[in-house]
Image: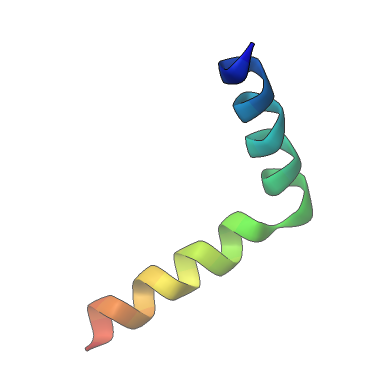
Length: 32
C-alpha cells in the first residue's frame, strides 16, 4: 500500500515537472 502511494506521488511529480527542478539542483551541485 505504501509503495503504491509512493509510486503515485512519483508519477504526479513527473507530470508537474518537479524532476526537471531536481535535475537542475543536481547540476548545480556538480558545478560546485
